[in-house]
Image (cartoon, rainbow, N blue to C red; front, side, top):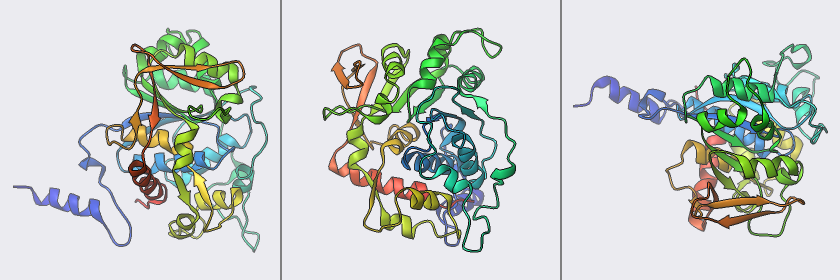
Length: 345
């Protein structure tokens, strides 16, 4: 017979008041340990992915070990800290890329969100005082090494949704105070797999995350020592968040940073839609066995000198690419809209 404590926990995991509350102890498995490597600031899907990670952590499904940035812009790291603080998860270490020169522009929502004011000139987000923030952020490669070195073997999933700059530098990194292993050895020992949003395997199209740092992408896809699961441009293009969801699902606070960023980036048009490229990697990492996506046969991913990507089937290949059918598109879209906007204690 189930105990009253279990029944109470189960009830609380269903609903309390008007919002969902999940007791993380109800999950039988250990949370998936994730490093989130992102070009935060270039597209709004990176923000949705970080919101998902924070909500999935509150559910007990993932543990966000670190965030590393591949966008070389001074607002990218504090913006990630700002989002984490909103979700009451302020202690996630953040690493900024140094001197890569890749997409240094501010973009449409980083600075704008950090400095957002209401009609009375008051800050919309008093929980994060960006003007007086003195946080010293890690260098991204150093943080990757530090984080991996502290984890058990074969236990970390890296979700890469930006450029390959940081992972290429990790592969080339020498032994240091964090680990006597080279970066390649450290990745081989500690990383369970790499899941990445990169490439286009349907159209003859140079995908953004590849073409902005082609040498790094060529290196990572040729030399990465673990399995790679790759969500191509064509997958997230077919799964779209709706403007209606943005208008309706984030009203539990007056100013929600995800909604505000979306407004800066795209505007709150109920008829607008947003592709969900980066979110696919997070859902796969957190819920790998749930059938949200199909996978190709094993193979290798080849990146040519101009940034075009090709998947080559190969029996002993380490890479697989995502595939998605109509039923999965519907399921994944619903999961995204729920997990991004979910309110948890």
